[in-house]
Length: 295
Image (cartoon, rainbow, N blue to C red; front, top):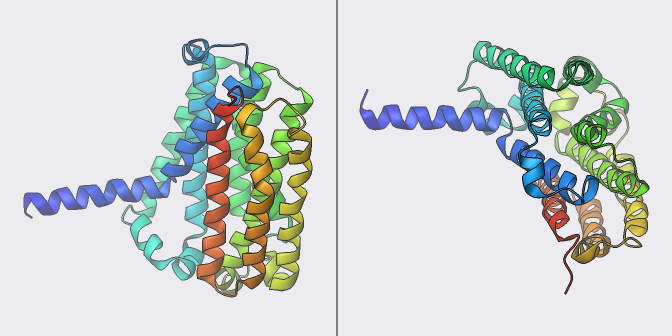
């Protein structure tokens, strides 16, 4: 095998691992946790104070490792479905054998446990609960009607709950932000079910589109996304600096998404909508840094 072939194969393996653990999502998660801590949960603390706080760093790393492991175990149980819904992505992710995936899953959780043990026994219990909850979702709950959407949404919020408990900030504005994010993620998760209908139907997953139909699923996704505007309304009453415009802009942006949702009829369009919501969440994460900025 030529050196160029070895390099290409190594690159594809690294790309496979990055895709397997959803590297993009993990980067956004870490960035979101730091920005949330600095500008929302502990605005009185400096960047250096947070960066040099080893316990806080350990929470961030434990969250990232546990979430990465969660993507692996979810991919493991969803392999048959993904082979139908995303054949190219399936081929890329399975350049790493399932045996190696499970070894990596165990190592990631083990290192997450080590970082949690540095913090406190309560942190160990929290992350053990998080690990078990992710496994339970992937193994069983994901196939259950309706509960799967609520459960997966709460799982995505848990890493932020970890830093909230550590920084001990339970102001109402924190729950407004959490409510906005929860509604957006729930709507996105239902749209993702619409996107994955074919594989879910073949593998007998009891998602909303499979149990009922696309119309009702779109209606519930619409309700969830519109419901996010309620905490957004309360947030714009707060001193948010330039982030004010993000929540104001959420109204036309989400209405556009909903118009496109009701026009959507195929997997490509649902995938586009899924990505539009992910982009808006990313913009929201970045805009956290604008809370204390004004024109």
